[in-house]
Length: 332
Ligand SMILES: [Fe+2]
Image (cartoon, rainbow, N blue to C red; front, side, top):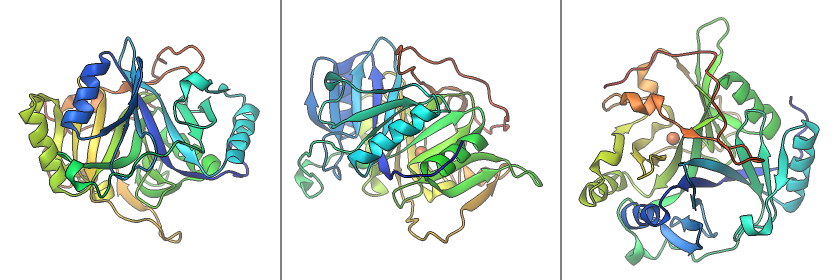
């Protein structure tokens, strides 16, 4: 792969979670997590966070099975969509434009099955929505600020790193690598906006989505979110944390929604504006990369992931086992 990059991906855009009970999911994400409903129809609920000035960063779509239908990156202009269309067509990857009734509030939207087999959308325009950052009287619980990133699993994360950096123009903030002399990349945290990542590409059975990362306004938001979950009867949906990652420096908690879809509430990472900064490199055998402090993850955090769908058939794609396997540290 690789070639010239004649388009500009600007940031993580949105993720579409599949949920079996739309009303239950809406109540969870709005009333307990503190996101805001912008719009809904019979099949979807469109949610945004307080920094968003556009219609949605998370879509809940009613479906027979949970999972992730696709995630999306925003690009700078309409012409970028045509350039990306040409690129994926040249690569002979499945590609289609979302129909009008499949893209509420979005302009033209390109949906592709990328070379890692993920369903990824690209769009340049989205309808605006009222900015809630200074509507302090409306802020609730953890106070989510934006969708920050998505974390995915692929059987060859070194190839995944090369695809995102060489073909899509992402830059690495942090890397986990294997032993010398090969230094094969086991996971990478890659960005377009100037934070630690818009996407993390991990080694594992894939294509699978591990989690979506949602930023919070401040560290206490993690505690307030846990309190709100417990108060609403969802204490068991707190899967891992609160704790701090070594990689990204994030204070975090991982949560499973009522369908089992996983997201991370996340705060405390740092700017990556300087283009001459070298990526931070972590050894695979350094446990502080995953957990700087806090208890080790439960087994299910390593073994349960969200399905990825075929953009033509809508069916889940069976995962392929990874080339490399680290020995995870977990508690049963
Ligand atoms: Fe994350």
